[in-house]
Image 1: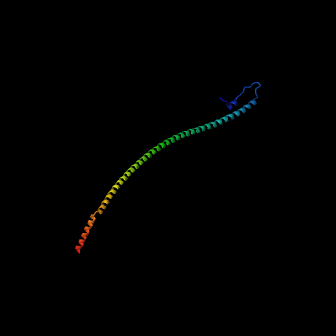
Image 2: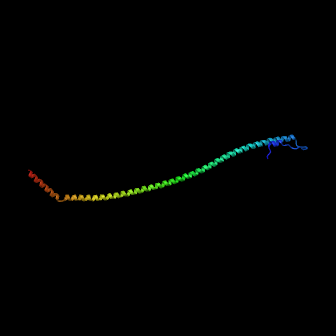
Image 3: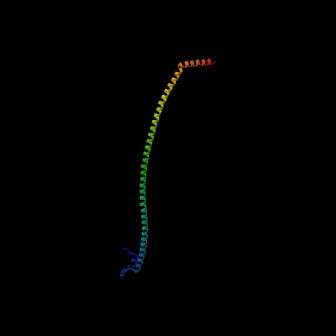
Amino acid sequence: MPLTPLDIHNKEFTRGFRGYDEDEVNEFLDQVIKDYETAIREKKDLQEKLDQLNEKLGHFTNIEETLNKSILVAQETAEEVKGSATKESKLIIKEAEKNADRIINDALSKSRRISMDVEELKKQAKVFRTRMRMLVQAQLEMIDTDDWDRLFDEEMGEDLELLETES
């Protein structure tokens, strides 16, 4: 157990023949007591300071641990968000590709139908043209026949007869 200033103050030395000067020893002991009290006070102050610093260090250590945990949670969350975004983007891309394929297939199907309709219309136009040509030719042939001349002559004769009988 360490000495206290009180222990130094109460210390008594045995006296011997021709011992030390008592005033000198007491004066020295008083000086030792003062220095020892100062040292103890400084030690106490330093211990209090050390305790405060240790308390602050503990507080900052807790903050550091909390921040580290928060950083880890944030990193994990960021990874999860990134993973979710990646999955979602892949799903969106797949859906877009499906829609694009469907649109392309619909367009190709419509294109084929239109092409078939155009071909059908071309065929119908050719048939119509052929029939029209045949009809016009038949009409021209009818116009070119001698029947018109005979009809014209017969009608003229009847008209003349009619005029003569009326007059």
